[in-house]
Structures are given as structure tokens and as C-alpha cells.
Length: 152
Image (cartoon, rainbow, N blue to C red):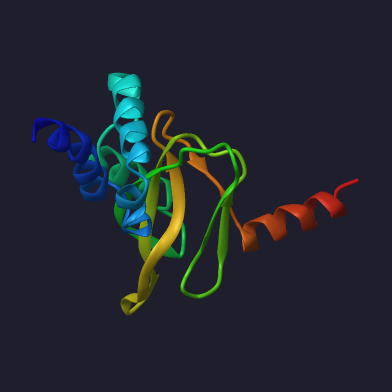
């Protein structure tokens, strides 16, 4: 009985404390849950954004002048070195080319003079350890590419 609890406890922790975009992944692959636990232990207190409160405060600052307003953050555990892509409900694609193991997904809504509008969805990512914004949205990537082509 103790062995079963030890095997399943990390799964329950991972399902509870990671992003809803990862729901079910840890149940289907319990070794990922152990990977998350070991990664969190390794990072320990060295992370700049070690709590959701810290991450949300940083997101509010980073997206202060953005048309989107951060509402919440969710922890995302990425166990591979492959690029990570997220497609929003409106079809915008965010890409993290070289993802760290722990990332805060920043969820928000568009803001107008009338207040917040639209569905809550991912508006960006913050690195758990460094606190820096990571990943590019398609529209940002296109603008950067366009500017790079125009600059001699």
C-alpha cells in the first residue's frame, strides 16, 4: 500500500500544481511527475519566480503596456528539449524555441476603455528560474523578421 502511495503522490501533486493545459499528462506518464518533483527540488530557492504570487506580480509589470492584462499564472513543466508551441483560442501561436524545464504561463484578457473583454487565454510565458519573458507570438515574430529585413 505504501508503495502505491509513493508512486501516485507525485502524480497528484503534478496534476494539482501545473497548468490545465497539461491535464492528464502526468496520469498517463507518471515518470513525468517524478521529473517535475526532482526539478522543483533542484531549483530550490534560487528561482526568481518561485511562487505564483511572484510570477503574477512580474507578469503585471512585464505586460503593463500590453493590450492584454494578466489575470493568473500557471506552472508548466516541459521535460524535453524540443520547442514548445501553444495555440490560443483565437489561433495565435506562441513558441518557446529552447524551453527551460519550468515556465509560468501567463493567462490574461484583452483590455479596452470598457474594461476587460474576450476569453481568458495564454498571453505569454515567464522563465521560472530567471523571471525573464520567453517565447514569441507569431505576430511579434513577424514584426521582428520584418524589421530585420528593413534594417541594412
